[in-house]
Length: 304
Ligand SMILES: Cc1ncc(COP(=O)(O)O)c(C=O)c1O
Image 1 (cartoon, rainbow, N blue to C red):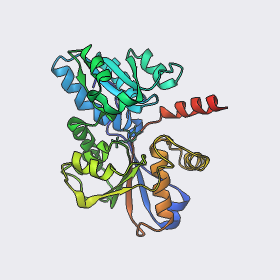
Image 2: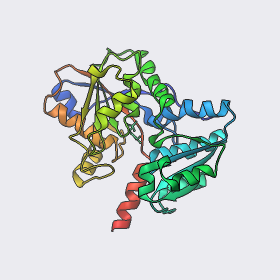
Image 3: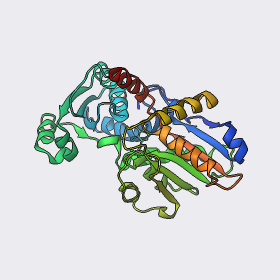
Image 4: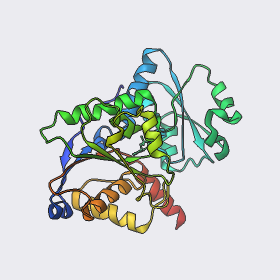
């Protein structure tokens, strides 16, 4: 991709009272620092997708997302840098004051809203298909950027970690939505650790979806946890916000409220409950999503 990325992303040892008390070694793979606009798992997923499009001379790309989508935001930025025309099919009405969509427009993305019903069906709906037909030369990247090439890009997280002077982790921990990032880890030849995926969604299909995407590789290493979704996708409450504030103050590491705040809450809660044996080495993969913090502030102000 034609951007100035920070790679390998830093692997940071975390100091926190609870970790000390329980004798747990926690490292955070700071993929949120890869780039200020194209960061986290979005960078990993888009890297080979956009490189391939460019090499094939495809200069238009269509993808899908909600009003505060990290994927849509990163795609808009990556396409602007790569000089590809991005078209975002957006769930529900378009509020162009929302900071995510405002940025996308400024970055040159064409935004087209569709009804929630059509969005659910994606290419199978007439409404969406008509939009796709308007751009016959465009490639379509799925929601969340999850496809085979995305998995390949995610696998590079492990290639980077293996070069670090730390013991082989007992666990990798990360947040899950479509399951693509977790599947990318499972699909890697370099995986020798358990992987705990904290679902940010209420749905119970995630395990099945991850294994489908990963072609059932390393199934025995996968643990999907559904206990920390806080009511479902993009739902939050005061307890979650207080946790994020407290974690950020203690570690200086920012967390979003849709994915990483929930997954880190889950991890810390399991540590508190002695889920991990003393001396365990855990690598938490920070998947980014920090642009969503502006969306949270925007929503909170709207509710006031
Ligand atoms: C910041 C962030 N973290 C985690 C995820 C979940 O990743 P995946 O959809 O690959 O499971 C997403 C959404 O894709 C995301 O935007």
